[in-house]
Image (cartoon, rainbow, N blue to C red; front, side, top):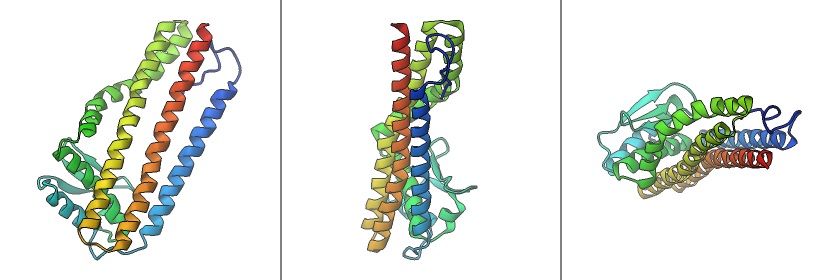
Length: 236
């Protein structure tokens, strides 16, 4: 987030609204991250029906016509992701070889992304198309914004806000993509005949994970509204 307490149209000193935005963003981020870590830790102590995350994900992939998708190990904790560029699932150590309810839930969630790609899920395609645009906008919008403020050029601040808006759009598209992947994961776990505790645990773990995307989207929207409001006020 930019510091908006100086320069063109933003006056001097500290903006209380901006401080509130920072506090809200921090609270949302810490609360959701703490919740997912706590929920994951709880269900990582509950054994699944005897298979590792990688094993169940492999079965889910095959059941969804994703036989060409590979499963590889990635370093770190909860660094699990699906990479459509090389068509591989990357699972952290705990979820690759671990046989907990949490491991299975996370692994199947990533398999859900592969199934989305295989089946041409519309929002997945939109999200993929936005990736290069967002990579550029995220690296440039702050620079353009600061230049607009420093040089007193309103057009540059407007351009910066437009660039930032692509990040907000990306967050809004990402949310239903993640929710759908979780829905697919829970549906497969249930349909595969795994016990009710696996289904219930998967729902809890993936619901907690979804809240992190909700918080990220909400924070981005609030920041965009703040930028729009401040820019509008200072041009009046």
